[in-house]
Each structure stands twice: as structure tokens, then as C-alpha cells.
Amino acid sequence: MNHRHIIAILRGIRTDEAVPVCTVLAEAGITLIEVPLNSPNAVDSIALAAKALSARAEIGAGTVLSPEDVRAVAGAGGTFIVSPDTNVDVITETVQLGLKSYPGVFSPTDAFTAIRAGATGLKFFPAEVLGARGIKAMKAVLPPALPLYAVGGANPDNFHEFFAAGCSGFGLGSYLYKPGMNADDVAERAALAVAAYDRGAKA
Figure (cartoon, helix red, strand yellow):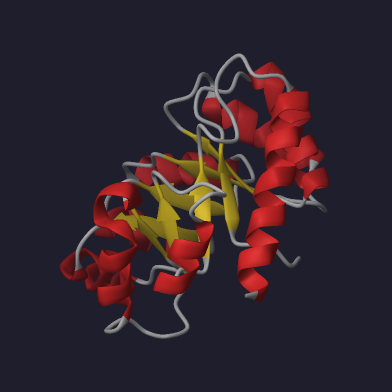
């Protein structure tokens, strides 16, 4: 399954919304979808979405803070783990279970700690604080093929800045989804994000 490097972050989504919202995201071309574990009944939402969209999208978890959380997500059919910090125990458990690992980093020390533990890619968070210049400076010393994601402040209006800094993609939270938004609203925003991503990726 080929994916754009856009991770949809559905913080606060309810279980009854998970499949409809994930479906419109996949239809728009966003096929990496994260349900943060501090959302209501998050593991149930992951299980429902993973089953419903198994051939169309990958469903993972965010705000993953412990190896126990990783095991719960794997048991629900999740395929990737996103964490806000560089937790070696979480990364190691993720890799051992065959899931993809995207830990949050903010410094070169964080980045290389995550790489040595087996991270699949790095989530620069919060990107709006670190900025494109900070990411570009760190990119110079990181493995060239390692995917880098700007999360926290990235949106279609500034994708080009982060692409220029060396990012592969983005995590989009409140831009794409906030509690109370309906599937049509999400679909509209997803289409704008995909269009901006495709423009930037080709530049």
C-alpha cells in the first residue's frame, strides 16, 4: 500500500465516528490515520477502523506512552505507533511487534536516541516552535532516507516551508478534525491538504 506522508490525527474522535471519518479521509487520499489514545475508547475505534479499512488505509495510535499501550494497539489491528516523546521502551516494543514507530523528537539527542532504538521515522514536535530552520539544521546530520514529519503547527499554508527544510510529510490534527466536525467537513479539509501536499511534493 502506497501512502502520502500525511498522518491524520483524530484526537477526541468518538467510536461511532471513527469509520465514517476514516473512510472520507481514505477517499481523499490520506491513508495514514492516527487515533490518539487519549480519545474516548480509542482502542475500540482503532479496531473498528482497522477492520473496515484494512485494504485502503493504515490505522495507528498516537499519544502512546507505554509498552502496554503498544500491545493493546497491536491487538486491535493497529499498524503504527506515534508518541509525543522519545521513549525507548515504546519504540523497542513497537519494532518487536512489527509495527512502525514514529516517536516525537525535538533535538539531535532525541533524534539519534530514536534512530538507535529502531524508529521508522521521526515526528518533529512541536514543529511550530522548532520551525523549518531548526528542522533543516538537524536534517543535515540525520540519515538522508529517514522520513521526517512536521507535527504541531504544520498546515497546507506552510507545507512548502517544511518540504524545503527536508521533511517528507506532516501530521495534521485540528486542521483536519476537531470533535464535533462531521465527515463532510473533514472530507473538504482533507482534499485541500492532499492538493497542497501533492503540489509541494512535486516542487
